[in-house]
Image (cartoon, rainbow, N blue to C red; front, side):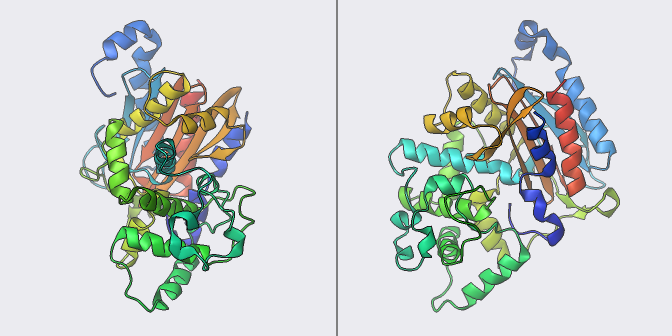
Length: 388
C-alpha cells in the first residue's frame, strides 16, 4: 500500500507470481497434544525453518514463515536472518509491517459494522460524508461500500509519486487550514479522490486501488463516530490480536540483495498524509503469531466452527470464484486446491498469505526486505510449503 517509486508500482498490486499461482490451478502450549493427534505436524517447524533459511540465503535480511492447520491452537513458525542489517538474529515474536495484507482486516471490520446495522453494503460515500454532495463526479453517484472493498470503485491506484503531486496541488488550493488529524485528512483526501476523474468505470471491472480503502475508512469513521485506528484496535482485541509497533524490526529496500539499504520514511508532512490518512489501505504492524491467528480465525469460519468474523464476510470468501477479488482476498486454484491469496508491501517489508478456501490449511511469509525479487522468493517458498 501507499506511495512508491516507479520501480515499485507493481509490488502492491496482486503480484504476477501470485496471479500465476492462482491460474495454476507456534505459539501457545498445545503443541504436544496437537502433534499426537496429527503426527504429520511433528516436523512442521523444521520444514518452515528450512524454507526460511533457503529464502534468506537468497539475500533477504530476515524472513519468517508460518503455518496453521485445521484451525488448531498452535501457529507454527520458522525463521532465519537478522532483525536489521548487521543486527541480531530475527526472533519469532518480532513485529512486522504487513502492508496490504491488512486490507482484509479493514474489509472484515466493515462487515462487522454492516452486521451491527451501522452501514450497508450499498451505502454510498455521500450518504456518510455530506460534504461530498455537489462535489463528487457524477460517475461516482452509484459507488457503494462493496465496490470500494472489492476494488471496483474505478478510483486511482493511489500508489504513484505523480498522484502525490496531484494531491499536493489540491491541498495547496484549499482556502481553509488543513486538518491536523488522520480522520480529518482522510475525509479531505476522500473528497479529492471523488472530485477526480475515474480511472475506470465505477462499479465494473476490478482495478486495484488503495484509494477505495481510504474512502471506506472515512465511511467507517462517519458511521461509528470513532477514529479508524481506535475502531480497528478495539475490534482486533476482541479477536485476540494485538496491533503494535513496539519491537518492530527494521525494514529494508533494494532492487537486489547487494543494493539493500534501510527504509527511509517519508518526510513531513507527507508522513501524516500517507502513513496516517491511508491507514485503512494497509498500514498495520503486528507479530507473526498474531497474523497466524488472524488466518486461523478465517480457517475456523470457513470450516463452520465457532469464530468472530461477520457472516457476510465469511460467505463472500467461501463463495468467491476463481480469479475473483473481494474484501482483501483474491481466489484461485493451485494444483486442484482452491485458495485465497494476497500480498503486502510497505516501509521495507513484504508479506504473502495463502489460505485454503476450505479452511484446512494456511501459510504465510513475512520479511523485513522489500523488492520485486523478494516477492518471487517468498512466493517460491510458500508454494513449496502449500503444495507438498
